[in-house]
Image (tube, rainbow, N blue to C red; front, side, top):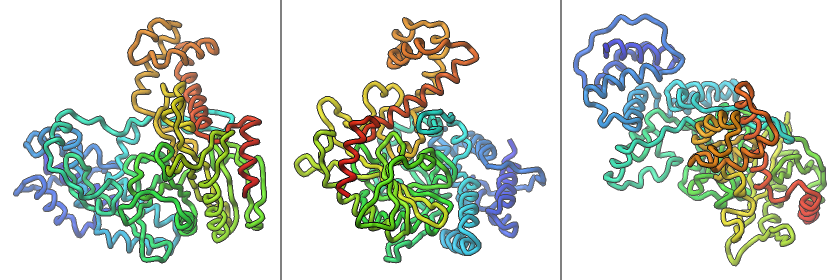
Amino acid sequence: MDINLLIDQLVSYAVNEKLLPARDRAWAVNRLLEILHLSDYTPSGFKGKTPAYPCEILKNICDWAAKQGLISPDTVTQRDLFDTKLMGVFAPRPSEVTGEFFRLHKQSPKTATDKFYHDARALDYIRTERVAKNLAWKARTPYGNLDITINMSKPEKDPKDIAAALSVKASSYPSCLLCKENEGYAGRINHPARQNLRLVPLDLLKDGEPWYLQYSPYVYYNEHCIFLSGKHEPMKLTKKSFARLLNFVDFLPHYFIGSNADLPIVGGSILTHDHFQGGRYVFAMEKAPVETAFKMAKFPRVKAGLVKWPMSVIRLNGSKKDLIEAADYILKKWRAYSDPKADILAKTNDTPHNTVTPIARRRGKAFELDLVLRNNRTTEEFPLGIFHPHAEVHHIKKENIGLIEVMGLAVLPARLAKELADLAPLLIKKDMAAIRKSETLKKHADWAEELLNKHTFTKDNADGILRAEVGKVFAKVLEYAGVYKRTPEGKEAFGRFIKKL
């Protein structure tokens, strides 16, 4: 393995992807030599084509580094720390990235994000090779074609890394994975390296408190971005949140942006740091029609309606200023609202239960805001949440229903890939006994029995049927998460709240 050739390939890749000016080639080689603990170098004369992404080159360099003892132990985590340091050589200074973003934004918002997204992928901050491992398909449901993803992109922890992490000195810097201080951080065994991460500060409210735009390293959809607070503060939805969401789609009109709810159970996986998620993708929820229009006397210029969706969605359309006021009004009404007949209580003692998941987008020149009503109350019967996936669907999805799922994209656990693959041949053979005996498959047994009553499985159709049926289960997951069910009683209860507006 010729390390000189690998160095030349990586530097040529960076030049070709416009991460590095050709003038800086020798400087970049010397930076790589420093990281690789080399003091000698002979140009290989490499003139070949470079790949679209650096994954294979980085793998080969890491193989070489492991043999030299530079990566020890040779685990995924240690390789990630090492190859991120290599790609950090080609990452411009944050101020340069910010300046370029705003210069390109003057040409068009899309031009700015195109370059920013390209560089995040080219620098291997977005790990395209791992994202490609995800299993993804669309499933037809009464609510449109839902997106189904089995998340295969996040590598499992090596026992050696787990053991090493226990002996690492505790550190509170950066405070979490979403803090702006991650930009350029070298990482450690229990915190990922971020030398190739760049953020763009956007002071959208002109209040001297900029938030920061970055992309997710494990994108679930096109241009999956994160917009995060510059302060390490908990999620909290306020009138300012709606203003920030709508100003974001004013600044980047080709993107949507949304926020997880700000309460446990109905919120996302990180509630300790205020942030939004957005991107350039059209979810099934955006395509879902308004099925019942209504008017709010306080906001005559706002078009309002209830969306045909498994969860309880109020859609507002109008000017930015009007939507900020209307959304704040609805949120305050909802936070204080109780309807025991519909299992909705605003509080238990001093513990609040009601909040929303908001999503903003543009419809032509108009602004649109979806407010998904959420309630996180638990009972003895439903200890994980009344409006949370119930036990019958836990074999597919047990985790919280956050922003991405709310919009119609299922992020399902990696275990399902093998379980579905193992289930298919047993369904073809109609071997329910084997399914019920299996430690990993018995959780699917009742579902499998239902499927055998509906379908005749063959080698040709088994995978397709299972994928379609997983989509139907996900639709049911979303129905459970809806505070108002799509029944006559549920619609009547939803109407009682709407009358309060």
